[in-house]
Image (cartoon, rainbow, N blue to C red; front, top):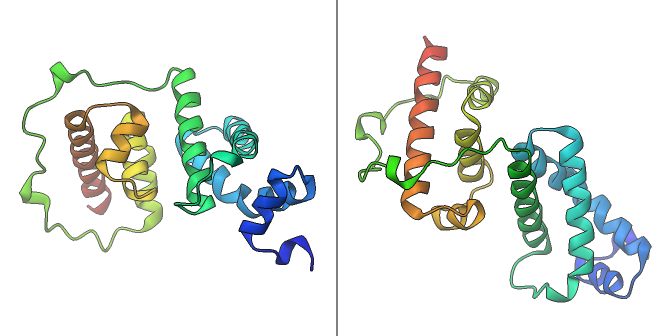
Length: 184
């Protein structure tokens, strides 16, 4: 049986024993998805590659901390996201919204609840997303693309729950406005 036919649990056991071929197989299985995750956050090819590689090194060195309560892929993805956010902040592109600037009502406007954007193509949507402010783009990526809920985003971005809701609400509103102009 070759390494490509071995299940991930067996590969991880081999990785813990220091088997470099097993590590290479794990890397080959997950590197594309982890690169894409890092790239969506850091928005730079070289930085995304660095983050991805550092994340694999971290994962291999901390495999004994992997409890198996989640899949290995989701555990690794969490490492990649955390490292990506650290890198993103290092490059000083992240802008925080202070809690004094947050309105108490972060509720979404029900006027937009039933808007139909089925005619908008995914390329137009991504173009509109990429034209958003970096903090809006980052939070919408975590929410819509990565599928994290508010609590997880609060933990990842190290922001309050109210700040998270407000940022998501404002980012959605900004995206809606851009989509309306594209649809017209």
